[in-house]
Image 1: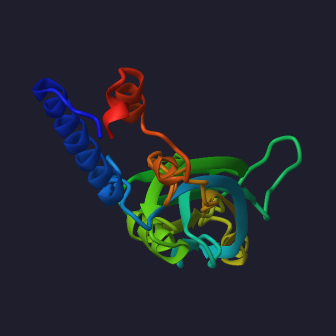
Image 2 (image 1 turned 180 degrees about the vertical axis):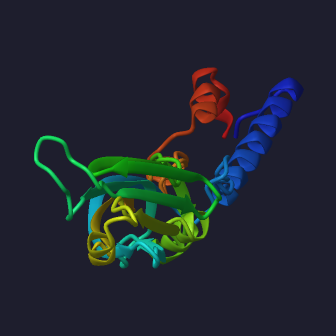
Length: 254
């Protein structure tokens, strides 16, 4: 039996206490809960809203009488099936007087006046004599830009985009066309026979459609179960503090 001095006994007691405390700490250790810092919540995905520009067109082919002007409200709608934003609308007015007297010195020319008014009250006017080709342009909405949104799924992301741009896929214009015939009253037969004029308005509109490709979200914390202290529990591992005790010679008392 080894006789220990008082100081040696104190060292042994301290070493045993350190080993016990360390062993308890290793056995009960668990990694703390990882918190994601930022606005992205658990379970949400990031979606980038991209826009593709497209063009549509239609034709207004009508007749305006000298005593019966053409007046209609013309509705323009982007194709359904996706979120769309109308940006520009052009009205190309084309017409030609169908009853002209003379070849070199034309007389009795009709005057056509077209007035187009948007929903927000902007009005543009065209007036031509004998015929013409004129385009009136309107700005409807600003061009949308790509952006990112957070949502739990594609359905929620689509709803967010729809709520942000609802109503921007449709607009309307009041179109009024008048014709003043050029035939004088002193030529009654010509005046009676000239009842007005045909005209054509080609409507061209620019619009953007939205798409939502999902972005890849990388984890912001360590993988689940990846505990750097798990290796401490492997069989045969000697903790650094125990190696230090053995190296100092205190281990001979244990």
